[in-house]
Image (tube, rainbow, N blue to C red):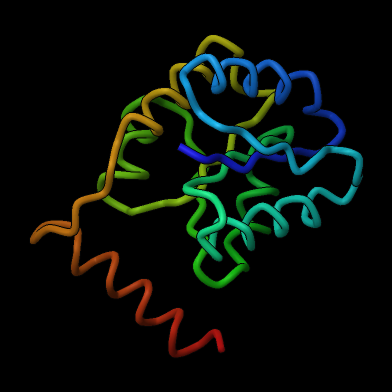
Length: 147
């Protein structure tokens, strides 16, 4: 899978460890950086690249994962979820078709982060009776509001 990643300067070391982990799983990873103290700028760049389908998915890091999630979700076609447990990491993909997950370097331990990333990347969204119409409603609303 082709992945886009980025973070704020505070999560640099965390992100680097996660990149090595993702590469170890066999994924191609592009680092969008961490130098910009305005995490929203990096989050938007990753989200734009994922929404444009230049990358299969994105993973963003900041202190809590919340700020980068908010910024990424402002990009049309980007659907980011802050994940805190393996179940939500899987459901972000399986139920919500999220193309980006976010993690907090100050609130999620490194071993748990690796489990969350692996769980998220192991799933594929299948448009089905249970979740398909719910995801469609979000995409349709976005299409009508965001031009």
